[in-house]
Length: 134
Ligand SMILES: [Zn+2]
Image 1 (cartoon, protein in one colour):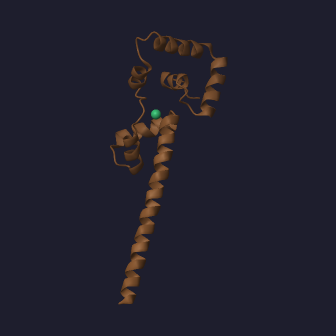
Image 2 (cartoon, rainbow, N blue to C red; image 1 turned 60 degrees about the vertical axis):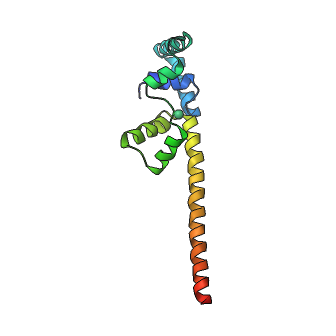
Image 3 (cartoon, rainbow, N blue to C red; image 1 turned 120 degrees about the vertical axis):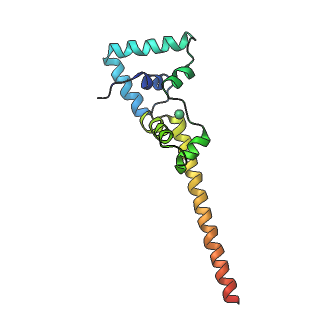
């Protein structure tokens, strides 16, 4: 089994893990005292205010992508490194915020594509009609 790293625990603290992963981690926490200790340390670190949760997330390269970045990700219009990071963030870390942004953008992107196709079809139909009208 994969070792539960700080990044995953932080995502857990932020309740940013998928539900199944939250449940799995809770199970793991019940059985693993060193993991509980690690979690406790992270929470203490966060609550001490020395490191904001944002700092910790950034340090672990866990910061959320902006909507624009997710849009570019969807279109494959960014560097491989960035693509890989966002893919990791969404698929492996399972960030729910970015996932819902992605789903949302994918849905509207799909809608745009459908509309564009319809428009194209419509224009070519009109073109044919005009031609046949002579
Ligand atoms: Zn995110």
